[in-house]
Length: 346
Image (cartoon, rainbow, N blue to C red; front, top):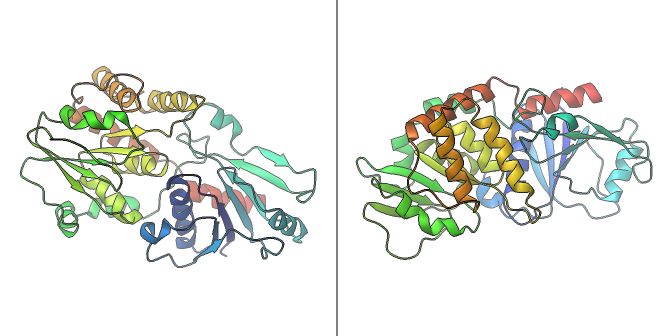
């Protein structure tokens, strides 16, 4: 029997939160559940998911005091605070819904300790309810990553040349492809010179601009906003991907191609520790030259050190990415774990 989910998402200042929540909602619905996605800003879904998804309805952030009947499971994404009226309706339900706070992704050790911890609510409007903390992650002791069941098979069947042609991207013989998606980044201006060792086509996502003349052999192509399946295919097509935030970071790992992560900057510097924690896990099985080269590029791209003059070997880097992906694919995905947890906790 399918579950009824309410997923709440507040958009902070970028596309990552709604991107993750849409993938979650669509994945749940593809497995027979129904989902109401409540958000204060659904504008990005016009290009992320222009066709919607069967089983998913998008609702505006509910106004008080009548937000409707809660479903079987309520997901409070990334600590967004649920409306009091909705929490009161949850408490009034004969069988309270399973209330899950889905946290941000991190490779830090505290994730394993905090995953599936509960927080009983002692005061109104949610008195008597229990909120559970659920952490995505990279190890078996965490909630895993969003990975739709058909994703690997779709990637194996993917026709790179046909997709690039369908998007109007003309690749010259011997040309390296690199996608670029980042926050405002001073290192961006240095990127063309660092990739000038061989012909390179930079595929720039909307809002990314490179000023001035480019080195010989380096050229650019401006992309439109792509729906999420299209962005996945962009990552599969490229030899190197620059990604940002959480959603594209995970999708780059499923692509299995060399990638550089621009982590969301935080004033207290917490992002640096988070970045290093991921690199420690990701590079644990890499050879010394690859590990040093990847660390240097990620540090340079995130403003923690000068950007290196050249790339490390894409062959060694790519082999590490494929091995990392295989390890992740052997683990349970986030939606499988969430559904099982919801059933067990009902």
